[in-house]
Image 1 (cartoon, rainbow, N blue to C red):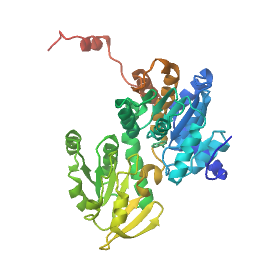
Image 2: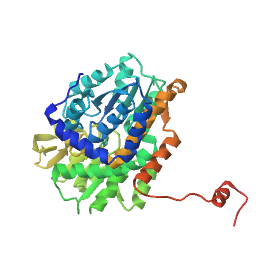
Image 3: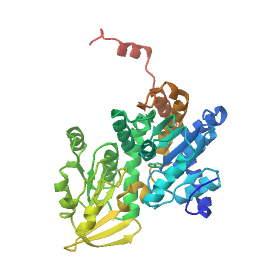
Length: 415
Ligand code: ADE
């Protein structure tokens, strides 16, 4: 079996940590037990391009239990947990191609390695795997799934231009994904990444969040909980209003740049923080990104403005500007929650990856009747995951009475 990981001797630690995640993923466990009996993915080759974490490992074991032949590479050069990659290769016999800190060439070499398995299905996070497949114009898979907002935006752009070559389920758009993973997962893990990297006190800081999508909402909620003065930067009037009503200050980035202590970008767009902002930031401002790609902060622009740069702590790079002010860039501008912390906790990835596993099964069953489009996760799958999660948490909910059902279905009844 081929693989490319940092160090196989890390596997023991990786195995123990995978077990920890597994213990916190009850919904995926139920799916794995059913997959082991029914083998719905028998003979299906699945190429996975995901953050190589303990939670992803549990998903890999689930797909394997379902009979799939899998190969895994990283969906970001800085998100791989090397001990997990080692354990997947050594203890579970899964071809893994991922090394934390890999350069651009190795990153794409690893995507090519996974494509060498001639996949029937792709499971992507950010759409780099799909993008390579479409640029190469080689063998086209039967179907795929996509994990994240950024990837779904890219796929929809391809669909719009009639360039998408096979059907893909947008896992991100399931309610049991974006309402929980994006909000509570990114919310907690972004703050976790900043704290692990800097060990700074968040209370009392001016904490600027660029983007008030689900990830931004989550980060804002958690920063507020830690006592920060949260400032939101937005371009969308609805989201800006929502941020105001949620109790946050809202202002343009040019104003926020002057007062912020910590900045996080979560917009999915390019150059949200750029030289005109670095020029007016306070001494010792901390800047980081939690969006999928490292384009939200104009790093080359920061480099040009700086007369000196050095790594001061793991994942903290100091840039000294001409007048002596210092700006601290975390995690090379890559998603800080996975670069400096461990990504979303298992409890939330449980639902995201339940969507992945069930969407892969759905795609295997249905690809023949699907068009080359981006599909939603079927509502019954999304709902079932929510129900199973509640059961796993020991929470019971109510049912409508027949009278209530009738009332909701009628239009004649008024006061
Ligand atoms: N994306 C964000 N957090 C993650 C995690 N823990 N595992 C895999 N993908 C993730």
